[in-house]
Length: 104
Image (cartoon, rainbow, N blue to C red):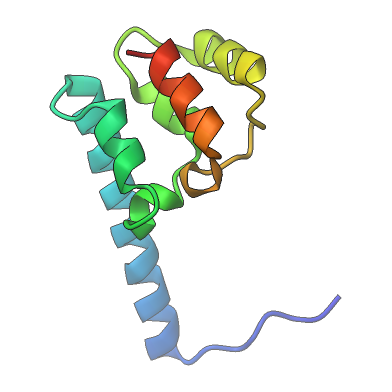
């Protein structure tokens, strides 16, 4: 197995900062969903254009919705036919429509 590329201290620091910013942005979006200041429909609409939204896992997004826990989120994904590892950008049109029908 090949070794990962060696990075300079500056490159490593920049990568860590970028990762921390992405985590912060995802947490902020999930908090907006939880508080109701953003709807699932709004988030799905941003999935193709916004990298942060597009790279979020569907399961994490659903678990952030008010009144939806781990069990309900997994059950809904299973019924719709969405894999646990699927990300928002990877959802098909039918899957997006089914999610909106289920959680609106």
